[in-house]
Image (cartoon, rainbow, N blue to C red; front, side, top):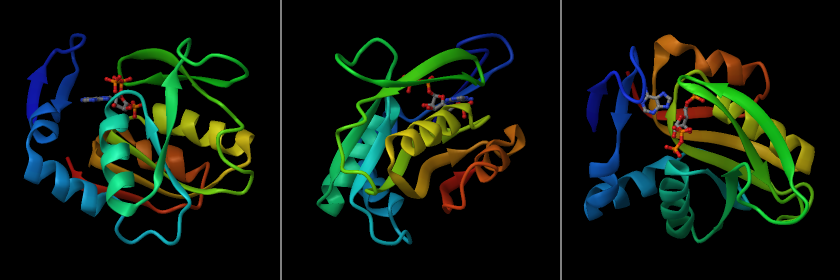
Length: 165
Ligand SMILES: O=P(O)(O)OC[C@H]1O[C@H](OP(=O)(O)OP(=O)(O)O)[C@H](O)[C@@H]1O
Ligand SMILES: Nc1ncnc2[nH]cnc12
């Protein structure tokens, strides 16, 4: 992991996992660990963009599919949309509500839990689509930013971080 001060804006210490993604044994180890300890699930949900790398790796490792939650404007047709704030800005996420059957059990995967805005918006999308979140998995949790409490206000699902900073 690298840490870059004042990126993408002043005051933000940016944690980048590109090196881990590019290293085969590291990516395999993280893919194997991310879904550890959760119960049965039907699919993995990955949040654009870094969550796609980790979500797909974890899903393939577990023999499951990966459902993409995308930044607004990328998915055609009928979509659900949730806007949110994150540590360095505002954005919106979208999903196709008919990708999985209602009641499907999903684990959401992303690289970093900071303020929790991104994953909270993802939780709201899952609820609106009728899917049951049985876990949230991240590589890094930035504890001081309080994201865990924000998510615990929305879900009883376990939240697992491989590394807390
Ligand atoms: O807990 P939060 O404050 O919401 O921040 C965490 C989110 O921020 C980053 O995504 P970013 O929107 O930068 O997108 P990227 O993966 O496309 O780089 C990161 O990958 C998480 O999704
Ligand atoms: N400090 C940070 N580093 C990397 N990704 C982030 N997403 C939100 N905050 C972040």
